[in-house]
Image (cartoon, rainbow, N blue to C red; front, side):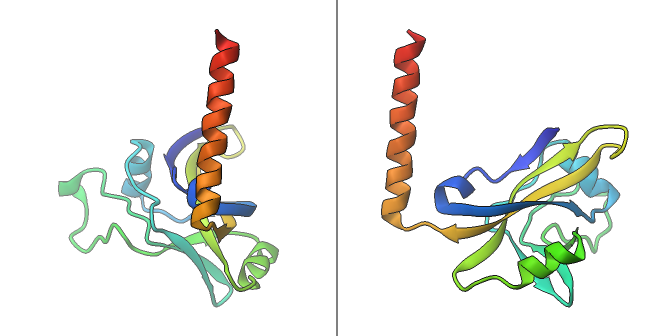
Length: 150
């Protein structure tokens, strides 16, 4: 499992409640672009409409600029492939929760054939003091690890 694109700030800005693995509907040159580790998940989120889930706000630039159609939008909405029960769970969110992508990765193996998957999660936003607490905790864990490494 090779991580292609990751949302590095999500663990700082949000508290992860529950995560899901989903397939993502992509064009061929978008797959090539993601395999080249280009793209951004910052500011993106998932919406559920009409019994389908869509990824909104993800930037996937074209792999080769001159070989892409002129009508291509790198910020277009992309359909997520989930089970009906998972979509129903995501549709019935409580107030104050949102669905955000964590990472896009390639799932290697004979069964999957190297399919591109996305890890999404139900998240709750952290307050400023929670973020400070997370940073302090990380710093102390890093210092402890340094002490034991010596």
